[in-house]
Length: 346
Image: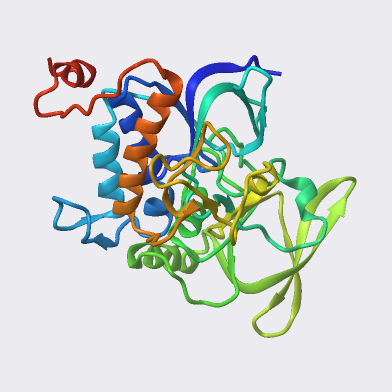
């Protein structure tokens, strides 16, 4: 078990509001750690509209979700938090000294004075193939992205999905001449894709060349031999049953938000959202703040702009909680020498 990391603040969620929360904490002189279930920062901006235009960010007439995350990350650079990605916060309990003990799905522990829940509509988790018995092979033969250190030499590789990631993964595996698989198959329920046209064209060319195969089918069961997954039973679009030989399955089916363990932390919930006080955006539990789409209050609007406002007031609330004796003065980045020092521009 890892030793607990001591920190003043822990931010749950690395989406746009979580990143801005870390920035506002930095302005208050509070360092933080950030946890996110995704393997990268960005949250919904990256998962749902990475390349779609956003028109209502102040001072930016238009930017994509990806560009917004890049700008927020750059803005956060004076206060670089420690990121703990690809793990979900699983436990949160109050300690006798009023701190919080927080644990993640990867066994990382934190002891923190403040918690900021910026989890949007919940943690994004991979969609799984609904095939009985397949879950036993997760992270062994079944993956949601192709591990960089996984040897595919002589392996039967099956990629399931119709998005950019699915096609790119299948194409990469098929073109790997140094680590050549025995076979590469892309499977989707129909011969239509939501991927970029260039990826679709590359896929069809490789299929025409016999380098890989596409199968329009849906999984119905798995074949297990000596506790090893050896095949996937499928029903083809023509109504025929077939067994695809598999050593490695990559289920690239996208991500879906789940409230997950948050529902078990003893916090008051209204329709799967956290009620907050609008002066500090604190929940009913002192020291736990909720910002962004996860919170609710009269007049709440689920906009990134509103989340930025909430994160600002939450940071002030945390500063007052962490140092009650300190007089809270409103300082401006245009004139404050203290903020200039913190920003590294003094």
